[in-house]
Image (cartoon, rainbow, N blue to C red; front, side, top):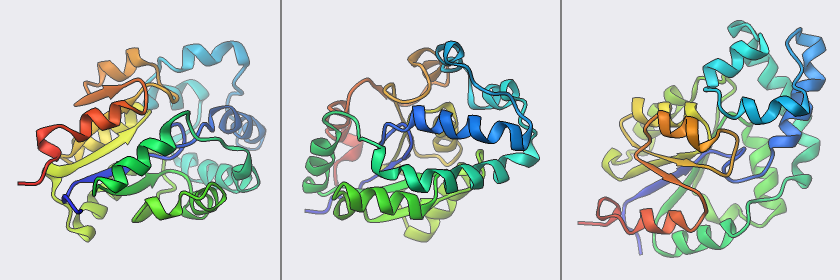
Length: 217
């Protein structure tokens, strides 16, 4: 039964546990694009940086970001079969779908990579739409475009992600932001961005789904 509410998910770090492989691919590209490599002992500290602070720390000039992302996405194509989802998430997505919620994906990864992963894991039936964006800070523009093209009710739309830029994109698009703590950014820095919701496990999505703002009038 349809309830006219939308749950839009980030991909890397939210639906799939790709963190270690993403770091691996970025380190492979660091010499080509002349930015800082990430050492294992630095990783915990990086989780406390905002998305803007991370780019500055890695010394990636803004004009290089789209090219770096395009190359990283190409490298990721061969790794999609290695990426697991987070424990318990598939069951929660099935429940949300059965409850009538419309599910979608908005990510900095490519649509091709996302579709390949969905098919490998038999998740393709869960999502109604997929949007990819090659610019690291372009999610707010794509989210606004998606809201308009799909005719979504902002009062019933939630964007779910693991990074500070996901929270910012949701707020700038006037939809509800849901921060998850099982991805890249730490709970500490996510809380500083003041998301509408913050959850530490997939079951938390069901609690959000019971919010009166998610229910049909």
